[in-house]
Length: 158
Ligand SMILES: [Zn+2]
Image (cartoon, helix red, strand yellow):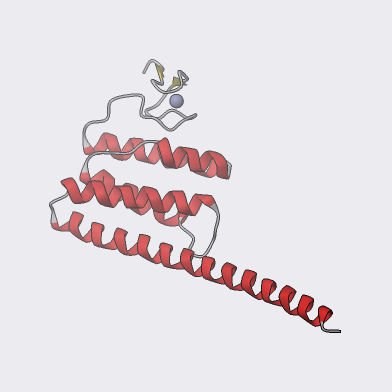
């Protein structure tokens, strides 16, 4: 195969997926080609630092065939860590949500329906853990403010 050029960033792409931005550089219309492209895309992630992982997950390859979409959703799972406020988990949750939405539009098989329910439940679980973190952070902040006010009042009353 001749190296194709990435339409997004102009890099040479020897395989299907641009190693720099995660864009699909060769047509992948069948499910087999899309699964291959997806495997290539996810192989880029472990080598990337968190900032690049976020960028890849936001703008990188997004398949269109429902079976490849289900696989793409499952591939988000290892990237999603509940209760961890790192940006990668949030971006992976966004991608999973987008995948569930795309499946909702075009996946009318029972398997796709099951995947939609599972993916949406997973995103909800992540969001709940996230809001719990926020509640804890706000609680700690209020406690600190309370302590400061108490300290000031105690100081003035001396
Ligand atoms: Zn590129």
